Length: 223
Image (cartoon, rainbow, N blue to C red):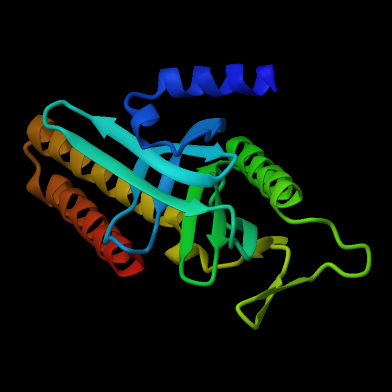
């Protein structure tokens, strides 16, 4: 218990303002940088993803150039599924999908960190369940009577998925198109400036401009 408390204190001390937003006796287990997408906003947030013994949080606090707080969480109690998702043509990032009856949260991180996060969330849920729900030898479902109504508690589903998509719509293809377009524009400008040859330089600039525009349109359509 002392080791857990010490680890929690280190995490809390390293993340500014976090202590003010934790619940009584809540212990932090893991913290790592990731991209948090709650589906509630038009854009995702780059933040610290923190796993505690009660919740999974997306959090950051900044006071420069202006004060800004981001805090979103999903309780361990009620999580129905945790999915580790690998997307084709996305060589760096992996995605975790955490769902309960009301919402879904998507967390993107590099492969090793995503795997660590997946394992930690699973361990935290199992530990939380073992401390709050008495084990049943006859079934994985536990029924409890409350005010004459029956509730069934079902363990979360843990799974891994590989998502396939066309290469031309993948983030890698869009990045290649955008980078290649910028390269053509710069190359065309250099050729035009050094040779004074418009028939040679202008087509390169035009091709680069078209590639960058298409990349922006694909990215916007994907979002």
